[in-house]
Image (cartoon, rainbow, N blue to C red; front, side, top):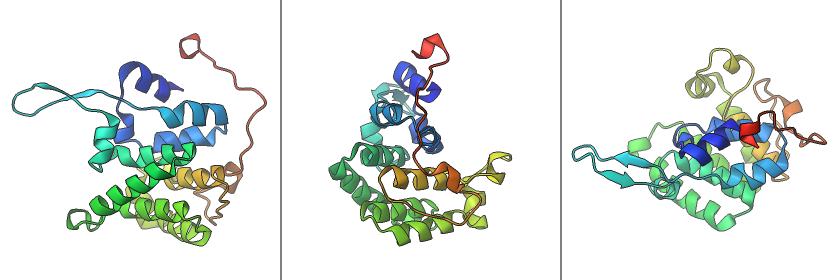
Length: 198
């Protein structure tokens, strides 16, 4: 809720660099919030051009079309919204950008391959990629929180939950993707604890 508040009220561009935030939101199982709020979040902030410091408007969509970091969160949002046309478009952009020479050894290729497998509902390929993502080498590169990385692996856990939300029940034998967090089991009622978030 705080992430959503920051994006809505301050045009925070956390989706450019924090793919984990959407994974954490999905773990709540608050489906109305996930699908009606989080999946539709976007920003239209600003950045300054290097030499002239002229204020140039930039939107999340602009960054998605360039294949920048926001494309990963945006693709997850489109999966949640069931927007196959935008998932396909994003996959084409990601494959062009993240499989180019400049990204030859990028760990983001796992993400692109996972999204492609999920789009095709290929359970076994999804599971293989998730297993790769929780391998010590990749897990260490993608998880820098000293405490959390002992217990979970992001974005792998978020990707596994996304699959379950789509009805693709992946299973990964790793303590870093706790199987208890994957089934969809919302609470009867969700309380909003702070007035400013209502």
